[in-house]
Image (cartoon, rainbow over all chains, first blue to last red; front, top):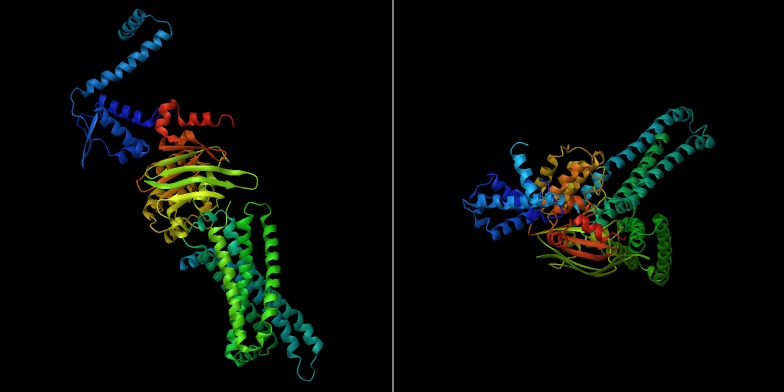
Length: 119
Length: 258
Length: 232
């Protein structure tokens, strides 16, 4: 796993897990790997994974059961919500980049439609 | 300390055996070679045509050769004794050795003991082999004479000599180790370390001679009674012990490996 | 839990002060990155903490009072150079460590070097720098200590071995020990450290939690490093 060094790594770990949920690799209610196992897998400091897991609990993305482990929340609408959040960032980024090179909002729509219709 | 001895043996056995092997190779090589030459001379000589000059000519150089060879073995052991600590403190492995969880007293003690064994073994082998070479070549039985005269000595004189000898050799080794200790405690990052260490060694010896001679002056009269002979030995042992303690203390608390 | 507290540590050589009023606290359960260019005092600090160098003044306090033998057992130092005996075989070196360091975990070393495909009969001298580098770290980490001081473990090592060393170090995090790693190859090892300490000309320049610093300064520790030392 490659992580950027200019963004806190624990945040990137959270993003990684969110993506896994969106793609269905991790399902709501699934058990997360133990801190050490996951840390060894993605080759980071276990403390960083611990921090990520704790932040995920705070955000309401995961919860922990003493003695058993950590789980993704069993929320059916979770996947939809995460996908929506992720798409928001992508769209905002897209629009700002297009605006930067001079497209107006209407022109952006036209370009999108044309591309999606096979242009 | 046994673990340290294991380590020392592991470190040295190959070179030690090699040097010993080389010694005996040369020793036996020349012994056998010269034996042939000598036989012809000796077989022709008896009490009637005894020729001293010829005898010395035949044997003199050869015996001296064996004495020099044995001295070489002895000096090799001295160098070994010095290098036991010198190399240990100089090579990069020192970071490993000096971080072993044992007091410096134990470590230095083990090195002193190993060095003493080396030096005494070399001395013994050298001495006995020279006598044997002489015997072999001349067919004179000297060894028996030596052993008899040793056992003729009073036991306590014998013990006194042995202890005195051990103490003296220990002191000799400790003076070298003390030089290393002082160097590493006060001059650890100076250049030309070897030069400074030799200077320290010379200085220490000078001091010791001055110190000991002034002590001997004061106890000179008391030595007349035999009780004080042992007192002198005990005092000497204490002195050697004090030097050991200083070396250990410096290595435990004062030395730096830069 | 604190592994070690350093207070006003000074180390003066003839005309140079290698460490200047240096104070820091090392906590257990963390990996701490000691960063700085060559000659900034990282090695001096480590060698003083491990007892191989004498300090000029200052205080070094462990959780429990430590002296002599106990200190040497509690602090495991791995120097940059190869400190192993070149004439020893790999198996002899492992036996050496096991016999002198109580609590040495032989199986940990064997597992680490399994990947290296090392013959136990190979001499240390015959190993490549990468193999030697990984063996050194494995041996040091297999020791049972409270403070591990790893001095520039990545220098002169090939990229694959570097990764394996970093993995080995990252997996060693535990509540009963503190691992301090010094390096100036910040880019490679910044992602495994919890805290960073920047040392400059013997002084403490900057210190903090790595993730917090990334967040606050909006840059990698590597870029922060360049910032800190840009005028040197």
